[in-house]
Image 1 (cartoon, helix red, strand yellow):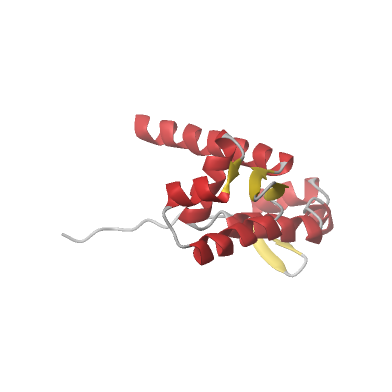
Image 2: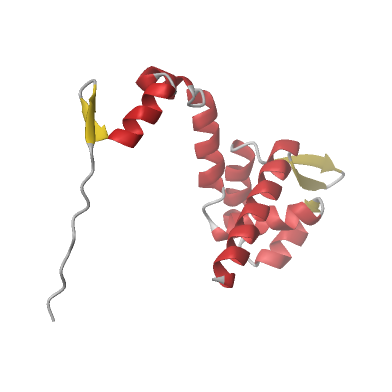
Length: 141
């Protein structure tokens, strides 16, 4: 059986050096053109911080550590018992999370107790809600 493919006709419009769909061109023009679009981007330092946070969250072990710290502050020995990894590997993951500004450690006697930063907690709460909402919507359909 041969499938027929229909091609939708799109009205194109030139904007500067770009030839783009008319609807996009009209919307872009209404928001100030390319300059208006660029003005709405977050500053580079914010983009870099976002990149660091998303990279820090890209590893399942680090996500598990962050999830543990969402429950309560913990010392390394408790984190290690749950994630079941060597000291050096755990230290590596904690360092990445610290450099990203997502966790802080506080010396308490012989122990370092880690906790989420306020910004990281808000970020993780939002991401968890967004993920759970998306998951519920996709399982309904």
